Length: 404
Image (cartoon, rainbow, N blue to C red; front, side, top):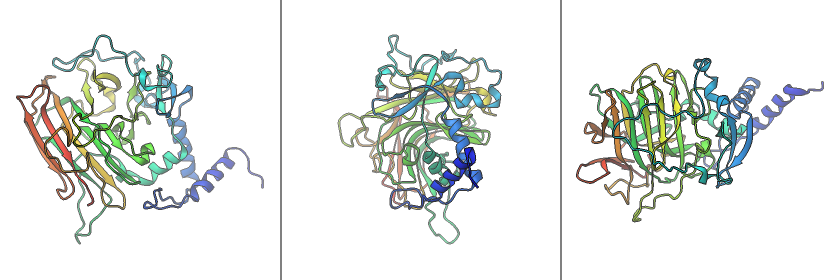
């Protein structure tokens, strides 16, 4: 029988994916044969991720992004967006007192693109995804997904070490009943060594009931196919989750010139006199409840999550610091790969941390933080409140060599 059309494509995918059988140790992702339904599901995800693009453009590092119509982003597929009133020039209506203020003559992120501009007006850049990107992510399933330090794993009753787990070294808010409407940080750019199926992230995490938002830098070969530190956000909302803007609960990008998944350069060198960092913030707009992502030296608003995404209207926990994950191997490095010694030129850090409290007031001291690591053999965290040093405030130093 001759097979044509979509069915032929499905059989071809099954054949290709069914013959990708490699190992974690050799640098590839182990795969098993896919069923017809799994192959169709991957095709469905490709259609969701790779929305039709007005044009394809490259960053200065040669990465491909599709310029997608603002209203055709995956986030607009969410059922709650049917009667939305959003537009591509959106910015927060309200700005909290005491937060960083944007410079008047801001030039944006055009310098990151080969064309010096970015996407055309009315479109946003979304990184293109391949079948193998999806296959790799799917194989790792739920245990690979980022989470908060409150969700830790343990060894079994026979004291046999389970390597399929996350580890943390973070400063986190104590459970004292405060509601949070945002948090910020200046985060050092580091490139910890990781192996395939591992990731090592430095990030801000805001827990919003059962949901959460993460933002920061990650070295994640499965997600980005390299070992460079790259920007990321991760959203968990209503039982769904994804990185960046790649699903209907993901972030709504509002910038034609900002590429999520950006490779960060230069990377901090341990012991060097200058330590490079990026500014991140996740701030709730008091006027309408939308949560905004801020990024860059001027803390520019680059995207948002509609208030309807989350069943809870406030955050109940916040943490700053490192998270690592490993599948079937001892855990990777975190931060600079060394235990912190409380020096900005030697350690990975989150400095100038702040929170926006239940009354929308900015707190730069955050003196109710506890230092937490789930395994002190591989990682450590140290907090310092530099109240007498301008622009540093509360600093969280974190890192470690892993190997656990």
